[in-house]
Image 1 (cartoon, rainbow, N blue to C red):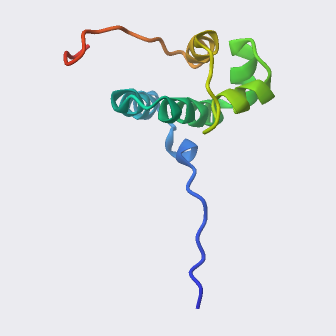
Image 2: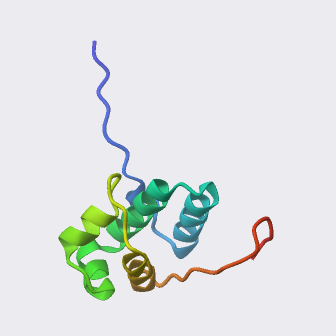
Amino acid sequence: MAIETTAWDPSALLTSDKAIQEYLEIAFEDGDTTDIAIALGNIAKAKGMTAVAKDAGITREALYKSLSEKGDPKLSTLLGVMKALGLQLTVVQAGKAA
């Protein structure tokens, strides 16, 4: 008998600001740009891709493409999406808590 599986959708668990913040902090701590883009994409999906794209000033299609596994968003896109999500980047010295 074959085991039936379903795809895991992390955006379904991103229902609070705290969950979103912790999820994104982990992505940034690892430092993998693909993981960061995917994490932002999952957060945007949780918040509503169409609304996030509009608030970020890009098309929905461009948002999906930029925040996909093969995407490589420009800094302006990254900052626009973060602003649309109500987030901001904070710079701290490596190894020190914010």
